[in-house]
Length: 493
Image 1 (cartoon, rainbow, N blue to C red):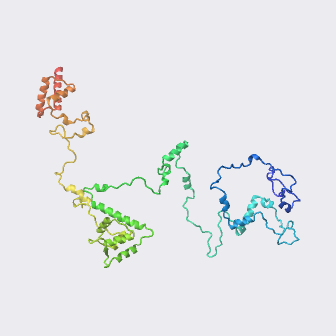
Image 2 (image 1 turned 180 degrees about the vertical axis):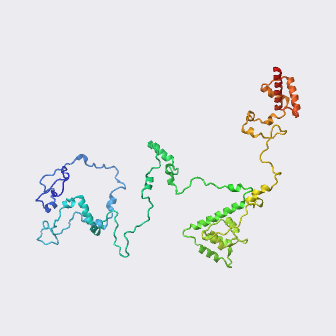
Image 3 (image 1 turned 135 degrees about the horizontal axis):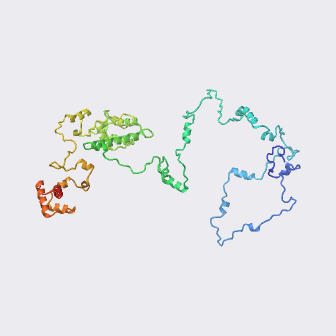
């Protein structure tokens, strides 16, 4: 073989691939000449399998083949470029180099050129007999030469571009300094997982269901990632219309001002115009707009008709709401009563870079609701008033012993209600005058049955005590207690 004893065989058990066909008597002529089939010493035998032959398609009874025929390719062959035509003409031909050679030179056996001198074999170049350390040392020594010849640099090595005019300092550092902790404290925090609890193994189908129906920590709830199919900063839901009056307007002692609401709408409209002009690309030409307005000023007085101002504004694509704009210009003294506009003040009003004209004070409160008192004066006003004319603070206390009963119960009854209060009864029900039949029926229901003579006697005494044309429940109960006490004393004596 051609490579015998030239390479170190590190696995002699593995056989080399291929078959050696080296022949000493073989020349270039015998290699390039391929014998024909007729000159071979053996007889060729071709085995043909009749079963694998392509069976011809049976002809149909229809004489017409249809539109899918091969006639189109024969009549209109595909177009070929000049290069394709030349390439097909040279197929199968070899350039004959014997035309420019002398006649007595054999073109098959003569070799031209100079024989190469073999200095080092391939074995020493591929696998030299050197240690790895020796190879690294030689590569370090010759690294400067490789930089000059092959432009070969180590990974991370600075490239020397040989700048001479102007010279450059090799110690310069490009870019911004990274704010980092040299001790690695931030890395420790980053590598620490936020959830230190034990992990729980769940079903894959259950985890997929939770991912599609529940939001992750710190993310917006987006089932099936539908947030990716809407534009950025998209807002869901309906636009909430603001109330006509706010909480601060309704907490005043007077009705809210309609004039203040109109002023807010007018300022919102002019701010919308100023913002749209500021965001225009290319920038809005305020100087050209002012020059066009000045051309309409015939008397050089600084005022032009309102309709001309609207016409020029539409030419510069400034669309306004006329009612709101005219009302605001009247407040700012830009629009006169004869509908003339101060165009310089108008340009300053719509230009964000200029100062907005000063608004006059809005009297949104009526005079009767206005108070101009200091905190100290408001605190001392109560001290200067006569105390006798002021009512007593709180609800006065009323007791049962008083001649007149109040319509409310006492604080003690409210804090710790008794059984009567729990059933909706108060002292008014006990001291209300009733008829004799009502009193008799009421006490019979609770099990107190009295003879008619004793009952009538007690009712006569009670009516005299109440002196109200009837008898109350509390008076009749006290009379029963007095009667029971007498009977108990007489029985014990």
